[in-house]
Image (tube, rainbow, N blue to C red):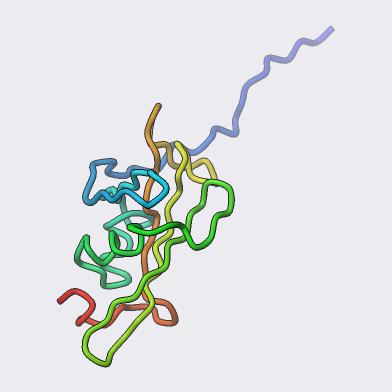
Length: 133
């Protein structure tokens, strides 16, 4: 009789490093407190401030100040507009209102929510500089 020891050679990848510290915070009209965490290159402030050129908390907090425009489980989408004279652009803010991201890779910790995953100007990769004025 041969007994084989079970060994797991397929280890789960360690969770990505990300900064859970709060950068911004806004309460929506339904009473949810939505944090924007510093994050990393994949989610949070560090992701969208560079990639999508959003540099001010007010650009993110403005849309969150209302009700979610689209809800898919714990994924909330808030829409708003940045207006400067005759210029206007739609701002989309996506938040995960749960402890973990949908793919399970990120965990905010017991009693915490992931918060804002990304924010961007609809229809463009990079928001115009005037959005941050």
